[in-house]
Image 1 (cartoon, rainbow, N blue to C red):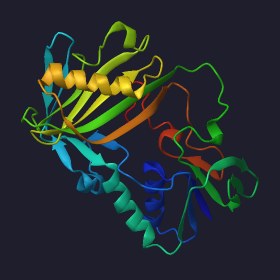
Image 2 (image 1 turned 180 degrees about the vertical axis):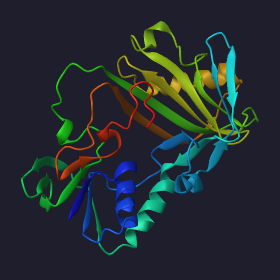
Image 3 (image 1 turned 90 degrees about the vertical axis):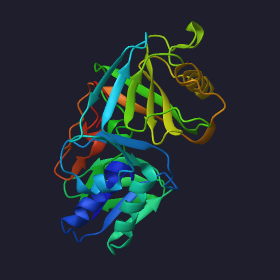
Image 4 (image 1 turned 30 degrees about the vertical axis):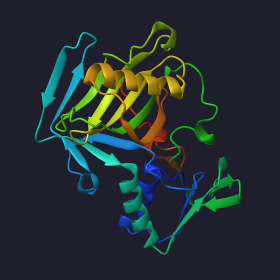
Amino acid sequence: MHVILGAGCAGLSLACALLDEGVGEQIVLVDRRTTFDHDRTWCFWASSPHPAAASLATHRWPAWRLVGRDGRTVEHRSSRHPYLHLPADAFYAAALARLERAPNVELRLGERVIDVAALPDRVRVTTSAGGLDAGFAYDAMGGTGPLNRHRPAGAVELRQRFLGLEVETERAVFDPSVATLMDFRAGAQGPASTRAAGALRFTYVLPFSRTRALVEDTSIGGDAIPARERRSAIAAHLDEAWGVRGVHVLREERGALPMTTHPFPAVRGPRLLAVGAAAGALRPSSGYA
């Protein structure tokens, strides 16, 4: 039996990869979530052939830019390596459809992983619904699972936190060919009383059309910023940087990415491995994987 701890991007991708490699043993995915919603967005440069991900991408930006606090802009362009947008719901639907067709896959939702113990001949996984004995177990919980619960001190530990609003504007203001990776102008700076002490803060803008975009208030380091304050920062950015007020909010997403120098080994033992962020896939300098 193969037990995958976590059914996010890494866990679902691993399960599909095992099936693609012809694994016929039982594959069990355990995750505390109960639904698969459009809860996040993945973006990446098309820097290497990846037909599966590329086929699910819903938007491509051949150009991207950074905007300084004074409004000065640096822009780069590449038609060979565009910046791709992969919405979570499209990825989930494709991965779940692949797994549903496999008779040897079981998806256990609403179940928390409590403990993982590597034994000489198996891995014992304890969940909120009982125990599982696996020939192989894979940590796909993004560094938050029991295997990383008590990691030693000494590493640099930062969080990249964000809240994003997908908005529709009444006027055509965006350029759907250019993604803004960092904008240090209005909104993100905010009044002094609302800044997270010591944080690097900026706005991230992904325009899907002339009137629709995902706008994220992002901070690296510092304390957590209340959601209402981030929403206000986004409104201020749209007003002062784009001249837009009174947008229609289509959806909201939020998250916190670990940016740490702590090593996350992919191999934890002969039968215990890790994938994704739990295996160090997130770059500590950027939060990209």
